[in-house]
Amino acid sequence: MKTIMLVCSAGMSTSLLVSKMQKAAEAQGLEADIFAVSASESNDAFAKKNVDVLLLGPQVRYMKPQYEKELSGKGIPVDAINMQDYGTMNGEKVLATALTMIDNK
Image (cartoon, rainbow, N blue to C red):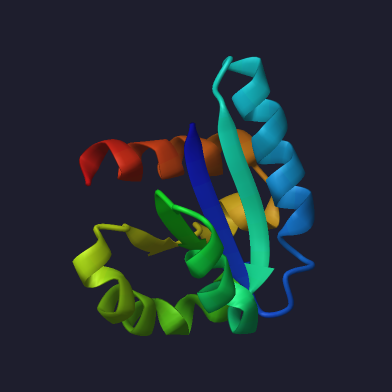
């Protein structure tokens, strides 16, 4: 089971992307817990779930250094979602990015 957390400013804009990523995971026969939270809810999510990778929506990409610093000792890779993939809601491509990040950690 892979746990993929997406963070955006309000937790709303990524919900469509989450559903597209879940469909892509199902199509690949991959068990994945993919969810989105707002930046303000992210610490609660880390306390409740064992997150494998953190992806940031373009609107909070400026927070990447902060998350990298917070998560450096936990081995959780952090990156911003490619703006084009986010804009086109390409769940398959974003899922592939997340899985690559997990495999490379």
